[in-house]
Image (tube, rainbow, N blue to C red):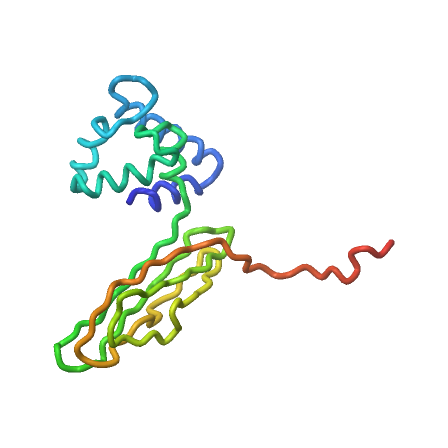
Length: 188
């Protein structure tokens, strides 16, 4: 949950990025208590517990950090995770009073990349009496630095209903302007 903050800090400018990277390296060194150049679960547990994380959340976070799955976090894994341009996705459900079937689920997406568009795929499984206005799976493309607000992705068709929140993936998507190549091979 620190990645968006540190990622924005690193995009401020080249000098600021270098000092931010140095601060992250110093943070890494501070918690590398045995000085072996790696972080173990035992070394980072006090830090993240202090931030209010449960042990289960900590285990999931460490698995996300540890890209090569060797059980320890090297400095390059630490820096890559904290400076990644991860999109922010929030799925919300409007309140249901138990009577009306006018209940829907909306998605809000912020593409934190300032360079590439992202194509998002939302997959719905194990849903009963639910409708999917955008289809299943539903696909949205969000341009660099753009936000898509409150797009309805799932609605209740009839009572009783059951649902699971959708799983989603995001991939880079070209969203620029195509070049005019009609005169690309013409001699001047």
